[in-house]
Length: 87
Image (tube, rainbow, N blue to C red; front, side, top):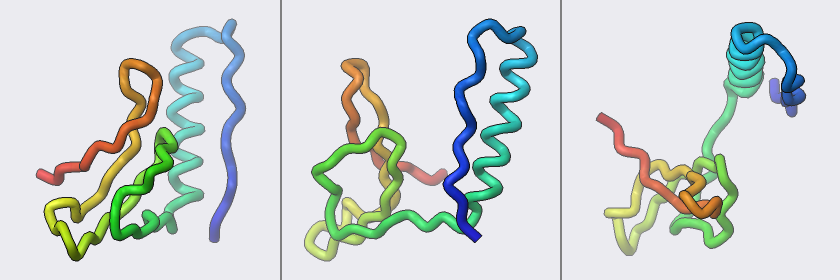
């Protein structure tokens, strides 16, 4: 089952504690609905950088690039790919 659920932004004038609680609950609901997520597979990092994207790279020419990558917002507000390191 797949869903395109996304919670609306919370009103800015909500109590801080209530706002944080609701944010956590909405995020948990969204994660539960997307539990069948599989990261898209690429042979190299995509040129298009969408903040929040997660991809799997399997590069036969350069295996050092293999792994999960996430597009993270940098200090200038632009997306940049960062390799996820599993510990």
